[in-house]
Image (cartoon, rainbow, N blue to C red):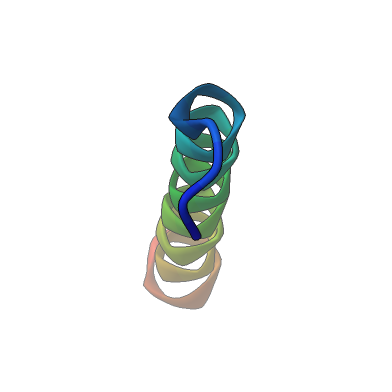
Length: 33
């Protein structure tokens, strides 16, 4: 947990963006079109 923060921050950001993309996609597929 106490290692370099650069790669960890980038990885966490990508994971968060990916989850948000999945949530938005599910919302569009579920109740959009």
